[in-house]
Amino acid sequence: MARAYNFSAGPAVLPLEVLQDAQKDLVDYKGCGMSVMEMSHRGKDYDVIHQEAIATYKELCGLNDDWSVCFIQGGASMQFAMIAMNFLTKGAVADYGKQGTWSAKALKEAQLVAKLRGATVNVAADCQKDIPTRMPKADEWKWTPGAAYSHICSNETIAGAELKELPQTGSPLIVDMSSDILSCPRDYSKLDMFYAGAQKNLGPSGMAVVAIKKEFAAKGAAEIPTMLKYTTYTEENSLYNTPPTWGIYIFGETMKWVKKMGKENLFKLNAEKAQKIYDVIDSSDFWTGTALKEFRSNMNVTWRIQGNNEELEKKFIDEAKKLGMSSLKGHRSVGGLRASIYNAFPMEGVDALVSFMKDFEKKNG
Ligand SMILES: *Cc1c(COP(=O)(O)O)cnc(C)c1O
Image (cartoon, rainbow, N blue to C red):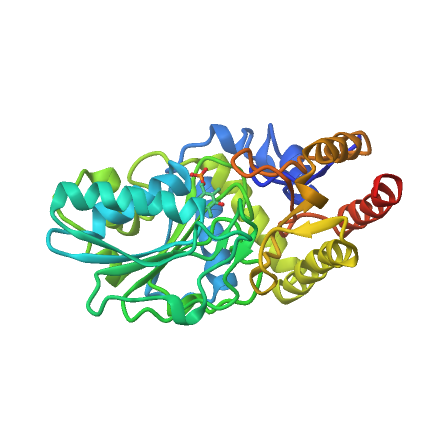
């Protein structure tokens, strides 16, 4: 079996161990006589899987009983809408960072809801137009006193720009952490809500993992449909309807893997992996990093070949692919090159890329 070094931004690489264990248990989960996919979500075998997944995640994120962890379908993009539907009530103001593609999409959903409701959305900082890509600096944010909430993105996956420190906003802070959740030290307990589409650092696609303070969830609008209310998920433990049970199972196994690896150890490895690639980028004019240095992402490394040479970039992607390194193409909206190196991405894959980059530069530089 040949596993590719999968640099995809998402769905992304999962720990091999998790896949192999899932394969072993695929048709008969630990003697239950059926697959996790076939079990009742109300049965006691599934219940253990569900509770353990939540407990492990809470432990890894350092969350106490004030918090709920919810599994909500529709990915991170559904959260963009749900957040506004719940918390951007009539007359309210919400602050949004416009930091790149994803936070701009969240902002757009809030603007739609604001129009419907008669509420206001304030753009707290806008650096989307800047090239090279960056995040807002600490003194650029303009927060609204008394805002219902503020929304930011900690890592812009397409740009490859990451907020190393989260800002203090003075209102309940909601963070889209789809592409850097549990990848570096963060004080999650200071937030009111954070969420991630599962398919980057947490598990398979098909849901968002939403951590929300119960007290904050309770402030959500009452008049919206049941499936859009956070309280439906917090009060029913994400079992109001049939949750994506298979995805939750793999998520739980992936969280156990993180725990076994040791999160501090993983954080250190993540920084090392990224640094190895940035070191090559900085070693010559042949390569250009896309994001400003102080905002360089440790999860999504983005760069170009001298003069934004698309022909050479294509050659780079094609040759890498032949060597077993897949998905190094930048997002279709920005082009260039991108290596997504999430928690489960192995160091050997980074070493292979680094050595290929050096070789490629020698032959084409
Ligand atoms: C991938 C991504 C999303 C969108 O996730 P979906 O689950 O596909 O909706 C949102 N925000 C960020 C930061 C992402 O990286």
